[in-house]
Amino acid sequence: MQEYRPRPSARARELLEGLLADHRLLPGDRLPSERSLSEAWGLSRTTLRSAVALMEQDGRLVSRRGSGTFVASEKYTRKLQGLLSMSQSAAEQGRRVTTQLLELRRTECGKHLARRFDQVLGYPLYKIVRLRSVDGEPLMVETSYIPARRVSGLEDKDLEHNSLFSVLEEDFGILPVQGEEKIGITYATAEEAELMGIESGSPLFWIVSMTYDQTGQLMEYCRAAARPDRLRITTVMELQAEEVDAGEA
Amino acid sequence: MRHDEPVGPKSPLYLQLRELIRSKIENGEYLPGTAIPSVGALAETYGIHRLSVRSAISALIGEGLLQSVQGKGIFVVGEKLAQDLGTVGGFEQTLKEGAQRSETRLLMKAARPAGSLYAGYLGCAPEDILYYVKRLCLLDGEPLSLEEAYVPRDLVPNLPNVDLNVFSLHQVYAFYGIRLVRGEQSLSISRLDSAEARLLDVDAHRGVLTLQCVNYDAQGRAIECTRSHIRGDKCELNVHFQREH
Image (tube, rainbow over all chains, first blue to last red; front, side, top):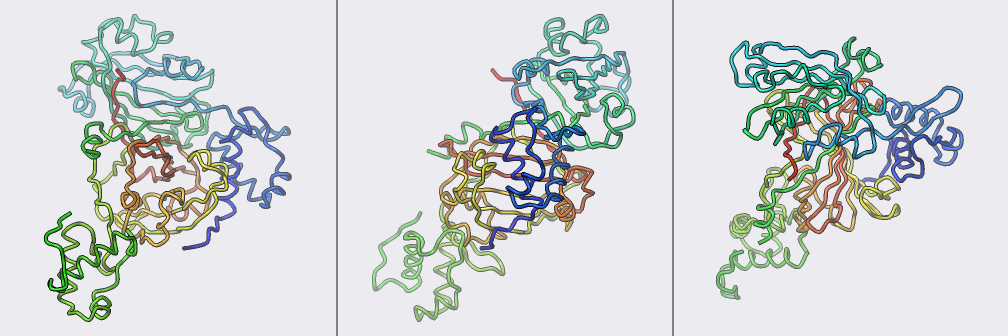
């Protein structure tokens, strides 16, 4: 068995994360000075500084020139189980979602979307582009596609003050029942960068989601680019119940 | 397990050896995840023919108590491995191109104090000892992910003797009758420091997908905390979910 010898950078990162994790420091609290941490932990100031810089980029810490380094506000958590709308789940976390409608128009399926919706070319869709912010801070740009025939008159609905899913459910009787999401990394385009107030080329979550309604039809196909310094995505994995029983019998 | 007739002094030698090895597994002399003595060594110790040793061993392999690993030896499996069970809700890695040949390289296996960060995740005391395992997963020879696991030592005391190039951690848990039934998973994008970026062969500023999981057994004990740093250009994560009733 080897001796545990972490690199100083890994140690610095773990110690800093430890400060945040056990709530000795809360969002908005100032980090002790670089000098006192480096003395307490026996790490060089350079090592500490680069660990702090990485955690700033990851959205865990914020530096304010002249006044020090602070614990960043909690990230918004997107829980994948349960199919809650963003507004519902933000409310659970005591956060406020605002939506800016950037585009709402009818469009036609191209090859790619036609395949997703299992329809022919030209099948009519609504395209909805929204900038979603949490507590006033831009979080993500979402582009949704919805079959137009099932939601005619959608352009008359207020999609800035109502969640899309609640409009679909209450006005059109379309209920989300199950879904699938693919999550990867993308890099901000100039347009996304401007909308979200970040540098173009910075890494973003790339989330492609497909949501199916009570009839099993694809009700929404959505692509979103989201700021990883403000968003965390969580899910719970569970062994399927009947197989757990069988295994323990 | 198959127990035919009791073995006595008149029984064939290979049956006597088979039962001897079985009892050494049962009383813990041969521990799960470790290799038993080689065929040659057993033949010499007991003064019997190598063919008899092989018959005894192959019978136990057939029962699933031993496993032969090419080039490494004959290993004790202990508890039979649970089959891959269906799961709901968790992230699955989907490779951008079809998976070809995957391999895992063990970078470090060491004991360390939990410290405040992992004590929090695992619900133990900061001074409790954890085993730390760091591995690099490669696909067709190219780095795919860097995986770290933190496991309380008391749960898997024999881990230092287990060859993790042969057995996965999940297999080791199975040796101790531990099954992971629930995992809390959290996905973020993080920047690696330069040494880790080099291991994964990525530009540090490009960011990687970081999946952190705390996994629990049926009794609700936290068994492991794992962190995987996954290259976003090689792989995406996929998850299915359903409306809660």
